[in-house]
Length: 304
Ligand SMILES: CC(C)c1ccc(C(=O)O)c(O)c1O
Ligand SMILES: [Fe+2]
Image (tube, rainbow, N blue to C red; front, side, top):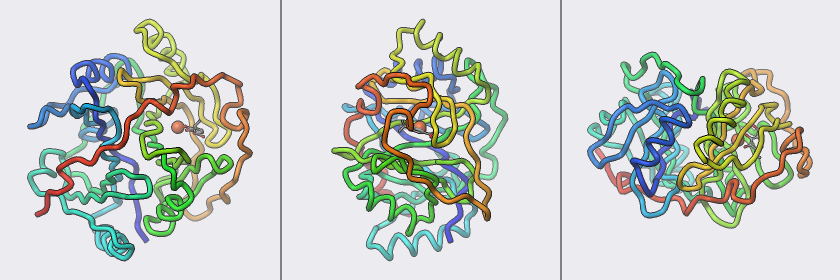
């Protein structure tokens, strides 16, 4: 059984790194950590070394979604599972791990969500206190993948990767948690026409963070595309907005937690607007649709 700590990091391609850095620092509330050898910008939102990496790209989108394993001993079973279904995981080089403050990392192209997925353990000295700025971000919350193969992808993440289904909304989206991490979902898998980024979520610790974000985003001229509202599935209060490339980001406050051993059964909620938002806000058509195709970073080819 593979055990996870959490959804821990995400790497995005953006068309203007300087502009994106300004947005994620000043408007979203992440903090600059440093700039890597290829000009990529590392940012943090909690006590981890970093949670977001921004790379220059011609088309904005998802490059890597990273999941922190509970410990080093999880790699063996994970590698065995990935190979058993014909996938070819790559070990990331020591130099690469050092640059990312990781003890060990493997990456694999997961064809059902069409994205590069990373599994890693952090370096022993990776964490340090985080002082929130414009928002009390607690952690990177979840990533949702758009895919035309949603049902197969859910089966793969459940049966091979040992994620657990928390809820689904019709056949449109399934929410899964990084077991035994308690939060309702660390990923979502959404049925769509292509493989791309649906959205990335940041969890905040106060309801005021949602209200203040609404004002801050409007003042900055950023697009608020859904909410504020309340999700019936996880019971969280949400606000979605677009980053400068049109990628959809979400703040959420409050989320159902599951116990490791006595979790409730997953539900299939009806596919109707009120099952996405109790409060009835109207979604802008640009919400969840602004991302280009996922990109496969060259660093996937690195081996030790
Ligand atoms: C509207 C999207 C797909 C959605 C729906 C429900 C939740 C939740 O219950 O937390 C989300 O986080 C979503 O992004
Ligand atoms: Fe979400």
